[in-house]
Amino acid sequence: MQYCHVCGTKLPDDAAFCPNCGTKVMDMSGKTATGAATSPSDEMREAFTRMSLEMEKAFNIAARELQGAFETARNNIQKNVYKAPIICSNCGEKNSPSADYCVKCGKKLSLPSTEQDKTNQPSGT
Image (cartoon, rainbow, N blue to C red; front, side):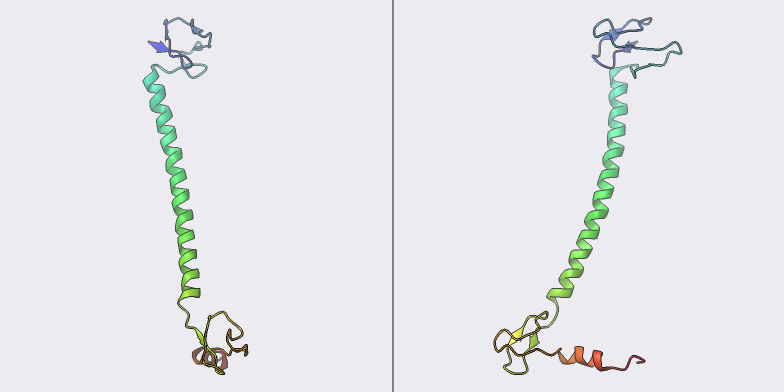
């Protein structure tokens, strides 16, 4: 027993077209030319299977993109938040690690001593 894939009408065994909507039903090999399934539930099952595979792909892509975004955010936070403030050698004011000049006195800030030590080391050690 077959059903029309467009309107769901029960089709006679020898029907080439749906008597309700006129859709072509089957070719001579017994396979449906326009996708009529042996029953509406089979067609729905196939559609849900295809849909679930596509959704799984989409969720996997989204998960990878989110993981990358979280990694980038974590790295940015570590770079910017966990740096020690730069203390002005002139007035003692604490300044943002990214500041070039003191917010209180305007003097050019120098690198903290640990960063100065790294930049003053010879390249061979």
